[in-house]
Length: 311
Image (cartoon, rainbow, N blue to C red; front, top):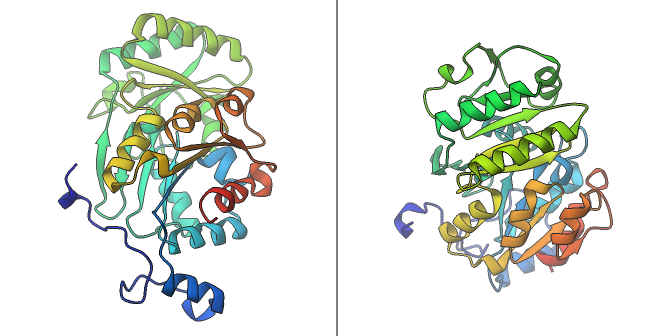
């Protein structure tokens, strides 16, 4: 991706650059001296998962976390929310929390979409072919597993069942129901999302069967014990964060990725430093370079920000 397409370019926060914090008058002398006279040795990127990592259990950003993220961006570093959530759901959280910073990018749908908030356009998209998506949904239906996918702005599934009602308690998107789910879509989906609220073994069986049939084309990964997601093998959070690093011209070695679920493992391995939350699955902790002492409900991510970025 050429430099001309990058838009906002990183530069140290100085008086000459014009990029100073909105709360400049409230900054302490120490903070002013840092911003005016010091330059980061190199800018870093924080790629953070949302649910179970950045967010509290009520899906909000704490005031303490917002302060830490403001400090991070004011020091010239980058923040990229990296989630399995659909784009609209991420934008809703960012709007409520005030997380739009210069040059903001979003990685959504488990790395299937990289979105530029400034141009309001995708930088990268990876989709699941219609025939494969249809087959996965049929395989799920045979096992009594709910499946859904998404348009640009809506959830789409066969009927408003217990699973989608549960899902929409956290993801506030409109719902479309249709017997032929994929006929509603104008383009191939970013992912197929399968949900079973009580029996993970059914999801595990489906995962194995899809991997045997489509392992060369599809990645199957859990985002929690109830959610199994299928997306292009060319997507994934790990591939997406490497693309974002190339876009900004920042080495992957200068990136930090934080998460708690199996779908975060690829980005923890791809980043220069992989962070697992205290509440993370054991397999995620095994893949990490560092484990926070506190969980997401107690702002554990701030510990990693201060240790590896604002150090």
